[in-house]
Length: 277
Length: 304
Image (tube, rainbow over all chains, first blue to last red; front, top):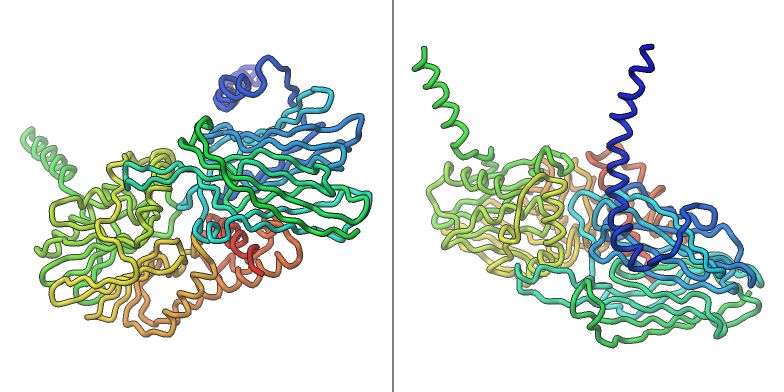
């Protein structure tokens, strides 16, 4: 008797706030992002195809490591074509769009991103049959004194365009091998308060990353200001024999930090890395 | 009885309208310091956590760091007024972090010049809107762009400020704790205000360059000072002894992160493994250590 009276109260007091927060969390997605990127399309929410790893708290808002792991093999018949990454509550939510091929071996992608405030981070995978699968993680904003820009942008600027490949292990022929791509670039957001200092600096960020192995695409990405300074990506490639990993990185500079209609043609930086399985 | 009650009410209202005076301690002739508590900035302390203070000359007072919010700035200004009739000529910002500069607007007056590193204005501009959001969200402090005031005087390398009968030597450092660290040396008492180039008890926080910070420490270690004032922590009178804990922590980060990178570890692994032997030696370790490893890792992975 006592329990039946108590239970509804517990339900109301504990569930309501959570439901309210959850609704709030989905607002930007439902009202802005979904219509913008997937108008009229069905998206299944599940961890069956891809999973997202992210820290519970963004220790450093300028450098939050996240990782999308795929749970299916890339084959000609069935493969992940694209993964879109968004941070709902960032001033410019689009982080990047990563395209894979059957030759990618495994459609995994790890990167470091800027997270401005408490937010859902989402990854949406598009399968070659057109199906869309979404997974998400809630990340708490960092406190303290750091800001989501980067600690030493002058240093990144002085190395501008320097690119490094790092192979994780000894290369095995015919298998997916993990590789890290490091790009030195300040990835300036352009979001400063000019009215305070009259200091005007436009955004300046990496917008295209193309990685090929012996001329065949491995990873093709469109990226934006939510990628941390010195963009860093980890992904797989399948070398059948010895050859060249090549990165082609293009940047741009846009007039307004959150609009992409007026942008200057940037520079392209390249790096080639010999691979010997 | 009623009169007594009215009188009591009157006293209460007088109490609440009187400006708060920030407690300060005169550590040596004319050098006054308010020592902050080792707390994570939040809505309870409103970001009032840093060491602040002022140095009094015959003609001028120089305030060093303005506080974690405009109200704390006013309380610090009140402490100056209660201490001396000498006017405030300078407000020196030691770097961009909110606990040191959020009180700037409290000092706005004719004849008061703000002084900072030549990269401070840029950092304020780049971080300003984010810091204002954080002030509202996390510190429970209402601030606007008008509270973020960039320096009137920028220090490129070093600069002397004459306070009348005592000279302050300001030094703009290469990137260390941040990319806009400024220290204040008082020739008269051989006192150096290192601000956040030095942490004691409170875990150091890295928001610039680990190698740069260690290199500045090396230079400072060779000098001798009677008094050293950290940005967070107690007064140091045994320089460089009390700095060794910080040097050890930062050196350990350098060694262990370099080793982790060499082993092929990723940032997210290093954050879980590096530097934990220091955990019990510092206040607020859990709040800042992983951020320190993150910043240092991103710097060190470009070595070679």
